Length: 270
Length: 191
Image (cartoon, helix red, strand yellow):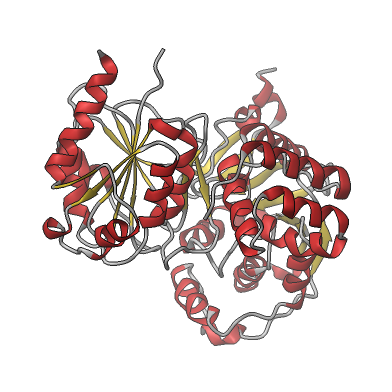
């Protein structure tokens, strides 16, 4: 892969923002360099300005580029221990509500939604859940909504399902039922609070952001959470660089599941 | 103030022992930060401190997102994530597709390291596939220093050989010799 010129990167991201409103300017430079580099290679462009020229003139061309910039690969029950922790430490609290809301931010192609629905179903909680799934990328959302996956993913599904504490035969779930999930386009970079939720899942999305943008997204989550709500981020991500860290106490530190503290405790007031 | 070197290490089959040996060669006091991609199964759970801690004078850590590099520390890519370095010497992770069937991939780390220019030192050790060769070349083209384990001394020679077929690195030698070179570079930096 040929390296990306920093000035050209800047112009590319600025151009995409001005023309299409998608703002990648505060994404992690290392990741965006890699994605832009492979974009440039894929089209055989001599430099990123050639790519930019095409993208600016043709919305169709941008529609092809958008997934390359946004789609994170995911899998069913990624980090099985995470789903086990959800069942053991978060679901017992959700169970105390007659109905509760979950927001999956950055749902990508939907593997995590299905994993979560299965875990909720097996705990007898799915009927009480209102689930909102959002992503920046309309194509990924469509794939998530269709809920149709490669046969190759069955192997991962089966292995991870068992490790995540599944109680049925994995083949029970080879067809998906998404009636309880609503899908929406939402951009963590530019959009505002989306819904009030008792549990927000946003795993391995923040790694693509720089610190400032991480802070923005985490503030958005903090404002979106219901009283004593839960926030789950990727196991290698961190609240450490954000001012919202003091608003949360870890429920499972290894799996990065946090609970919002009561407001008075967070602010130190009586 | 002179900018510090950062050492990037890639290893695959046979790498555990090679990396351990390389860490043992590092300076006792505040050596350069090391960033390591060792191919590993996504489900693997390694107690890094247990495996590498004894041979290394500094601290061994699993990289987390946005961690800042500090001297005398060795940062390992977590299983299931690519590890990249930013121009401000922070670390970044990604879950993009595997490269050469590997996540973490050595090429991904090395290609990101090219932003550090002459401050980057790339080290490619034993391994049985092609990962790391293109990335090491990228470090070289950006003005960094590149070192490859002598294939004859590697448990698996394919990875070092792939690099040597692609370009001529600054140094080819045993792990101990590579370690010594790194110490010399770092020492020169202090004086």
